[in-house]
Image (cartoon, rainbow, N blue to C red; front, top):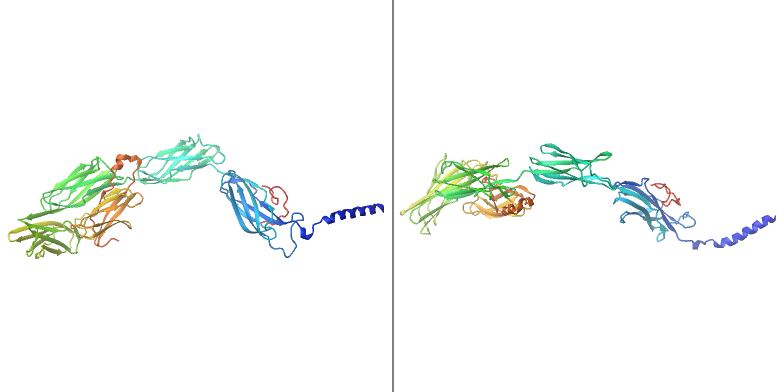
Length: 584
């Protein structure tokens, strides 16, 4: 009995001391939040290969556990932020808004830099009882990102002229575990024009190996390489490409059209260039076809230090000569052509006669007008008869006898057949006599007749430079527009004889050969423009030979129509979590 009484007194005394210390409902401490991290089981992996890290958070009382059990409690929502502190001190973060308490959110993280990351998670409550309260982030998780060794090739995407050497370099990159490929071997392979070729073993020094090779023909090589590794398989490099190009050669004959009086000496100049630079000492052949002006003529020359060779000849009769120049260089056959007209004028006293346009071309069945102008002592001669005669080999002779008005008279006619002919105008009046002859060409729509079928030559200029364009076949005073593709590059006005000269601004396009088109009315002419670059290998003297006003000659091909871990369920400090929410 005494023992029971004593026990009761002790219990009452303890309750009397402890009960007053219990907190009242209005004096509860503040809420606080906690964050748990669920990392992958692995602790290292390749850089760039993402790992999935999950986190959850809870809103708690500090002493009596989870708050809950009331129907008036608002939902707890927050923004969870993952943070990775890298070995180099930099930081990567990613946040996820609207995460409810006791649910998991996932971060797929591929790593940023090689080495160890320290990863943690925290939350900022945005709704519920923990808004504005303090809390604890998760414990840290350590993960190491590894970089594998690699082999790279350089340079990629470059171009070399055929029959010149190209060197490819393979470089070994040790990766995060260090090491070296020195003493190992690299095997190179190139697959492209002419088939595949290989290097055989190339010794590695300074973690690099080099292979030099060349190709005889143009095309693109795909280059691959593999380095041996001690105790492992060979390490391949990602393939690269390299292109081989033939040299850009041009042979031009100038002037493309010209007119001389019979008995004079006509001169044409052929110019040979390689990638825009003059080529010296190459044999070129000139051929002047037989025509109404006389028999065939020919001659050969060698190009000089300017890449040029000049040929001259003369005629005793009026007519049209077609001149062709050919050369063979670096295995390529080059050719270009020009047309030269011969005229003859006979004058008595002060009577002067001109006949124009001379040496032009007109499509068959289209009207052509030759205009004679006559002066006496510098004054227009009127009232006299002009006797026109048009003679085409194999065709009917056509004549007309108009009267001069204001010192001029015209003769308009057509031809159904392509070919060359000679037009003569004669005036005999009051003791005065004058006669003049000019050549003319009729062309078919397909380039028939004796008109050259096309000009394969051209000229060259650096991108953005200038070049002088010459051509013929336009109507007198016609507006001429020049294009490269859709871009307008120059304008000109045709002279009385249908020729034109224009300064063309070379477009800013990749190096290569382009077609230049000149349009005047319904007629077109085409030529080529080689855009070339200057390299340090050419030297100053070679570069100086590239003229910014290189003559671009045009084709006489005139077309009638217009051309168209730590364990799951624990925080990372190793402490049991207050709650283990269901997986997400």
